[in-house]
Image 1 (cartoon, rainbow, N blue to C red):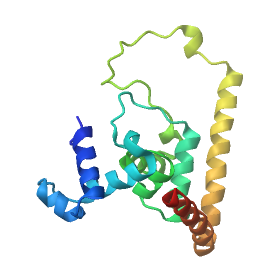
Image 2: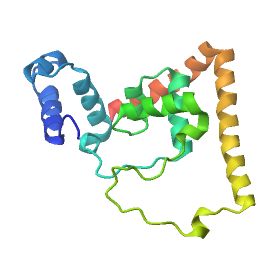
Image 3: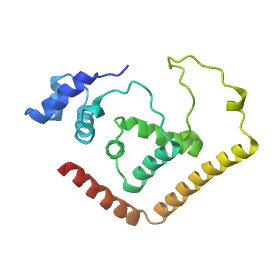
Image 4: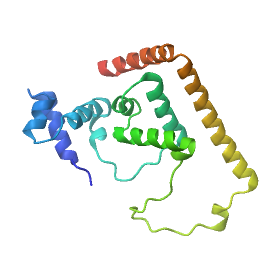
Length: 185
């Protein structure tokens, strides 16, 4: 269960934006251990509106390529997980942290969907044999695609390691100009 509900988040964001208290004062007023969640909620609200503060009812499955894109963004720009979540319209920065950890430990394989969660309310349906069994050709195609993704990522990582300053500057300039456009909207 979420530590803070949607109404509480909206109340604090509204109080921050339209009141005269800062992050630390609000955190103290509501007996929160840290102002960090309030900072995150305000940033997410500014980029996504009320939808960013809502807790998703269903667990969204993200494609492997999307996960790789977010990881590459963090590595290329040096952006924080919160900044990356805002950029990719995610309302949970810890999701990116988890993807990064899985990728570092297991590579692209760690980013693949794990199947149904044990917490899921849907009953597990037995799959048909045709759905489970891939042909040898399909297995090889799938493996090739995963290797292509991993290869593309490793090439970008190598370029980053060879010249991190140039790589950071190039992407940081583009990222900051995009943020300025969003802030002025």
